Image (cartoon, rainbow, N blue to C red; front, side, top):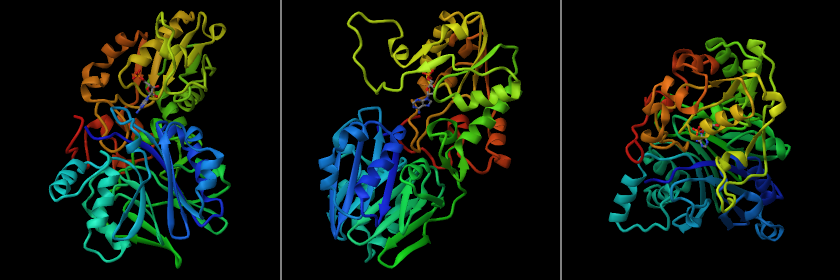
Length: 456
Ligand code: AMP
């Protein structure tokens, strides 16, 4: 089973407080991964690394940041589920090889890691972790090219699948995105220094200006001579991930050159037209359903209110009481406002249903709070297929929409009605004419890169 990475990357070139800026950048990208974080800085020609398990704020202290000297840095925040919660899998990876010290961090999943790893191991290569990032570093070191820059191109030509990656070396900084551009990567500027981030929200925090996306297939190289852009990978039709806009990215970010918040609003408006219903109140499942619910309320004219309140201080784990409380996991995160919900016909809006178990508990919670009717509206199509390019989705046997009809899902979650967007609605919301521009594989099963390994 390959590691499933949902990650955030941030990097900065030539800024006096590189480590602290990267720390802040990662702080803004915390939603992209909560299990591990790391920063590698460059002081002169020496690379210094610190990484560990936990939230960004837990992994870095004042004294650690003081130790991370230097004016360039790359950082990473990582999320993984199955068996991946081990320190050895945290990024950045720092190695010493033919090109001196080289550090790399990576968002996305390669689809041919196991194949390459097996071949390299047979040839004598050793690895310290199951990470696909280490495989890229091995390919770089074994490349025929004479320069690191060309070796990176050679390595990335062999990598299939999704990568938005940052490389820091003794005298070079590289940002690269795979030819289909599955995962985002943005270029920003603060005074004279360049920075990169998975999402633009991180630029806002450090007062940097968003310049543009790193384009699919583009490699940006920065060294003492300045910044240059190269397109060395085979050209493919771009397939940026629509699920970044549906669920994953922060609404205040620009992802793939468009506002996530504006797209979610449009999805909500579209949902109101697709599945209208007579109701008294539109209630979002916070935070993921908020902007689609606002769009639904706007297009339907039904009042919007926060009928569920989210506790923002809940981490990934919490200690349950010994005598178990029913639906404790959801209750600790969400609580209903009974005064708002009692006797009301509620349109409950969320972005997606994956396994259906959380949605079922939330519907029960709203019902117990006194809602007269619950009409569940989902601002994306049924999630029927696993992602192989960096979004953590379970295998098809656990995806409720791969196993049950919409009517059966409605019964399972206990709603009075259930409505999803169609693929066409989603394309319209993304202004994607003819469905040519984005990856919709989790909704269609049409994989532009064959999923050669892992889930099915
Ligand atoms: P469930 O009803 O158990 O399928 O959970 C649905 C909730 O999971 C929705 O609120 C989604 O926003 C959220 N969700 C969707 N995709 C993911 C993901 N890749 N990782 C974690 N949560 C997700």
